[in-house]
Image (cartoon, rainbow, N blue to C red):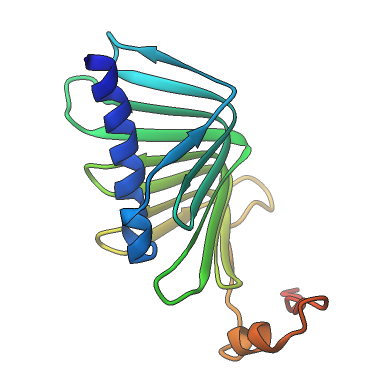
Length: 183
């Protein structure tokens, strides 16, 4: 019975993670494909070994490993996808694509916080933020990006011009729009 609760909790995590995705995505089933999985009932966690693919509507997560658990002594659910890199993609309500990649993608349900760590990138319709750590609070819609502070390692933000989306729509499928060089 408790193993079913763990699986249900991990599926609920995926549903809540999609709070800023297409409305229809929230009504779709969550499908997790993995090479294998283990359940640690005593510690209330499931680990999926990969490659792992999670799909819910337009939402897709790819990782080498996915861990769903509750923090000790708390009712807070946490989902951690790791890979080289782990990736997250979705289609927003307005039809624009959004994606993220990092060595670790962590979602904390209680605070609705998405944390990307290790060569982190967040991309929405061609505009992009990169850094060592990117933290995004979905409810407050606040983003914090940090670098390691070593040498040339910096947070980089690329903002596409207003007409970028129009160029994407009008570009022939065999000839993608080139991103402008930011140097």
